[in-house]
Amino acid sequence: MTPTPPDSQQILEALRKAVADDLERKRRLGHYAVICRDGKPMLIGEDAPTYPAPPSKRTKRNRPKA
Image (cartoon, rainbow, N blue to C red; front, top):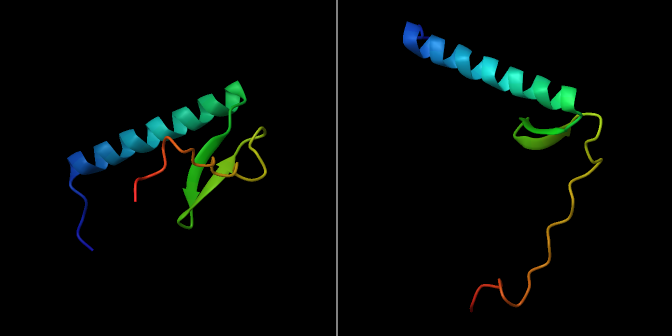
């Protein structure tokens, strides 16, 4: 495996810190977050719904034309 260039490593660390900070902020505010785990969306947090809401029904206005 090739070593990561120093500037790329700094960028990766900055992104990880930004995500960690935002998840902590959401936790403190009592908001849930949507993350990806094993390629699937997952809702985390105390107020997270137990399952995602069903997709809204298409109305006549936003239905694609045949």
